[in-house]
Image 1: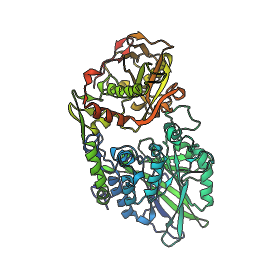
Image 2: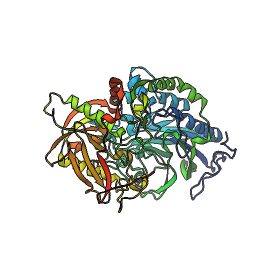
Image 3: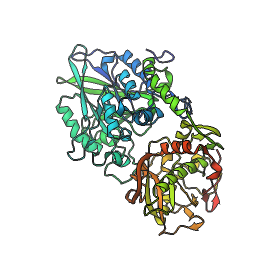
Image 4: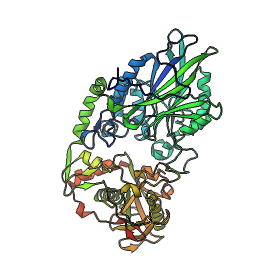
Amino acid sequence: MAAVGGAGLFAAQPAHATSPRSAGAKAGPDKPFRLTVLGTTDLHGHVYNWDYFGNKEYDDRSGNDIGVAKAATLVKAVREERGAASCLTLDAGDTIQGTPLAYYYAKIEPITEGAEHPMATAMNALGYDAAALGNHEYNYGMDVLRAFEDQCDHPLLSANSVDWDTGEPVFPPYVLKRVKIPNDKTVTVGILGLVTPGVAIWDAANVEGKVRFPGIVEQAKVMVPRMKAGGADVVVVSCHSGATPSSSYGDALPYPENASQQLAEEVADIDAILVGHAHVEIPQRFVTNKVTGKDVLLSEPLYWGMRVSVMDLDLVKVRGRWSVASAGATVLNANTVPEDAQVAALVRPAHEKVLAYVNSVIGTCTQAMSAATSRYEDTAAMDFINLVQAQAVKDALAGTPQEGTPVLSIAAPFNKDAAIPAGEVTVRDVAGLYIYDNTLIGVTLTGAQVKDYLEKSATYFRQVSSAGPFTPDQVTNAVTPTAPNGTPDYNYDIMGGLDADLTYDIDIAAAPGSRITGLAYGGAPVAAGDSFVIAINNYRQSGGGNFPHVKDAPVVYNRQVEIRQLLIDWVSAQGQIDPPSFFSVDWRLTANGTPVVITD
């Protein structure tokens, strides 16, 4: 099957400095054999090229298409061109969370009660050989994950998801696949799965006392020799951990979050790594192993099925055993092909059921609310989230020692495309404000700790020398030592009060750490010894983003209620959202006391 335009899928494929040999060469005693490893990652519940929050075909500024159905067309085309017997298909994790389609089959009609997960349906139809677990696989707890594992025809691999007490892997650490070679017997390919250790922080409530997550490099040093001893001629790692060293939790764990580069550098006998987790595109990267001096091939396809990695490993027989002589990789773009009819048809009933759910009307809104500018100015959309979170915690504190303690709340601008229209409001409208499956927790902080927290949040902004005008990108997403690609929007927290306004300025002309000015509650300056209850999500409270104080703060509320569902339930119960009743401008960006001007 040829790509659009008839030039062939691989006309422009890059090659290693020692160029890969011809794909058409037949294996023999002195001839190479090309093994092709196809890879996806961070599918996050996307089967179709569909935006459930916008109720329309997915589109972005770059013209990307998404979903397993599109990726399947690319995978099948490569198999047809190369020969299916010489291809392996892998995924690098984060599969069962991220869309209403995925949420519905975890919480509304859960797979633990007999429903089949649409991602299992799609992946089984495509015929994956193996998939690594991602951190988001743990979001819904071990029962849902085990049910998904049972439904998959391929193994879910995770060498560094280990039993809390014994230290033994609780999922298969690796699998040995035997690939038939023409005119020969077989080549044995070892596929190792690894996940970022950040799971221990981000999903502590689901894994504490059950599963531990040792370091990627450390565990690979144990497992790769076992794979080689078990007969692996070639070792491929499916690693849910970014290639560029960085961490969203600072020094909260002894192991780095993104360790694929270190894995390639420090563990001998790895030939190629399919990289995931970072949501970036790396068509081809070579990293020199410090032990052997050999180059290791890395490739990361873009998330949600936008790309498929094609890693070519040219094998030669040396002293009776196959080994990699050269390698190269590229990525294929899902927007060049139609969706695969088989995958699309199989998942259609589940898709239609979820569409009916997310498009159901649950209330009205008196004024439109948009999150488009929430990164740099106070908006009703963020105030709405903080209102619902704070009210839920306050109601739960009735009759406890914390009753009467002022309640504050934090919310991050997760989705700048989110909007709630004036008039009828649907489930998808509300869910679009909160696209993650976080649960709500209440902790206590002092006034001094609240200020520290806001100072950490304010590191999201780039330092400026004037009040502008600026574009949003000129002041947001600051580069920091732990965020070399820029601080993500989800690590900027906006704090608000419930019974009285919490007000503050963020002076972005000042250095990080000394930006919060005029911090007041109900018009009175916040004193260091004041006491507050903070409504916060479980990701942040467990250490995600490495915000100060919250991980060790006393927990006064934790009912494991999902924030997105709280928002949906609030609208359903109230029947109406009235932004003028709760919105006020409580924080602003300044430069040396002058309001900053930002224009799109």
